[in-house]
Image 1 (cartoon, helix red, strand yellow):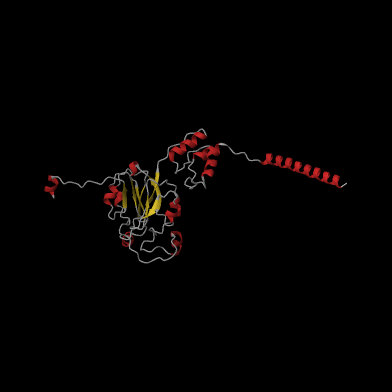
Image 2: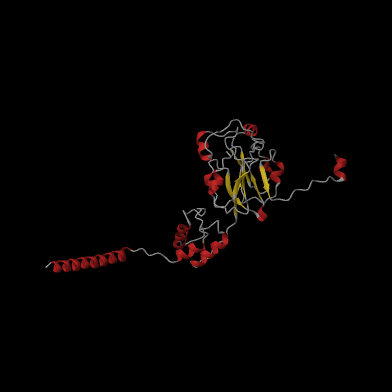
Length: 288
């Protein structure tokens, strides 16, 4: 009698198990999500650093959106560059438009020599936290705080703090233009600009929007909004707003005329050859 009970119990449990398995299988088949195998292929050609520079949370998210998109012209992996874009485009049978290389630039030249301190900060070593507490330890409320939030978030060792100037310095060979340092900077002094031919670029290294006299008093190399650069530019590449000049890198032709007329040296020219000093001719000497 006890043997029959055990047998029936085993049969019933086995039947229930088999029935449950069938139900689970049918449910799984009905609600299964198809995933395009090309997503794995696109992800495989990406760098895999998950930096977010492409605008997506990670490489997997980028690959999913890339495969599903009808138009891939807005998709670009700054870390992998054009080679990665071409490889990813081949997976989906499309062509990728070549993008202009970009690089992060620091728009502040307020070293201690140019921007003396007016107070001392003894709080946590965080630009974000310091910004929430006060405007800065110098007369310029717009400049770099020098606490290195940008360095901490860079996954490529492409930015470090200069011990002399107290300002971040971008390592050109390492910078991938991922934009992490830009997001981390609470003062918005870092931006992406075209890397330029031979790495040459010109930009206003200042974001101070105070009036000229106030700006100059707080930092000797601040933009004072004089407008001389605007007048000197033959390509209409410079605008002046809120007492601050800005150079449009799409219009700039790197002629350097703005650099020559800037009275405070707020405009930086990067990777250019040193200008030869002008030699006066005999006729110019006689006129003088």
